[in-house]
Length: 363
Image (cartoon, rainbow, N blue to C red; front, top):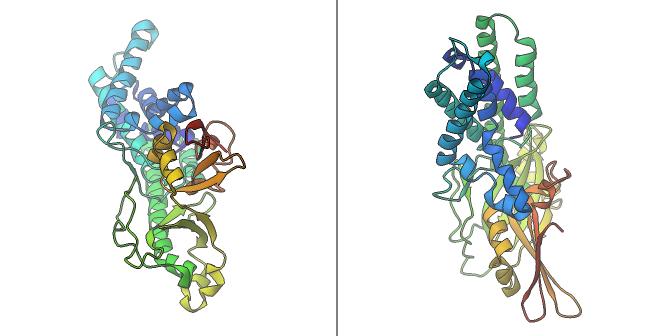
């Protein structure tokens, strides 16, 4: 999630019994709650390098332990350099380390329910995992966290009580999102109506935790298009608005849904909806396969969950392959300026002989 959410959550944790660990725990939790996003330094090597390392090792098991140790060491060194910070009730390094592990671990756990995902097992495995419950920025979660800190002043007991209330409301937000996500997937077939094809012969079975990259699914024996998977991605403004992505063997089809809209529950009227689908062709020609084998192609396809491939050939015979992660088409994140808005499309160009001319992130 965004760093403001991580920071507010870390400060909320500092008001729980973790605060009893001693002086310095608040600073440790604040730093540790943001520490995994230190992978932003990879952007110094360019957007592609950032994409390669993003939510990788710093979010894996070694990152949790290593960043917790570094965070605790920072506080210890700061105390050594400034005698005014040396107090009898200071938390010792082992306790700071234990508290920092909690802070880093919660950062990873907050990232997991987003549709962006996290590489939980890196560097041992670079697979992405996601629950698809939460957007990157959830306004309601932010409001709850900020309100608890703004209005939760008072004695230590009052602060801990207010922290418990905040965490309870946070759990409710996650529960509502999870229930709405399940409902959106249940209603998805109504959106696509008669245009939704049968599942591919080797399509992966649905699971509680989504993961990618996935191997290509085999089409039916008839050779016709088939359904690889359905996904419901959260939207920014409401926990009841979802974007349904139908991953087909030759395209991606997108449709928005509000799970409170009673019209979607009447399967007899599905013709109203399936004509409104947004379609992104995804045809893997030999040129696309060639682009996928390039350095940028491998990095982008290792990151992208739903990469739609498009090709074009100019009058001179030069070819262009463009991969776009349809998760972020029209999203709040993709519209933001800076490095992030370039990460969701990879453009690779070849000369008429198939030699690589350029590979860039962005259109």
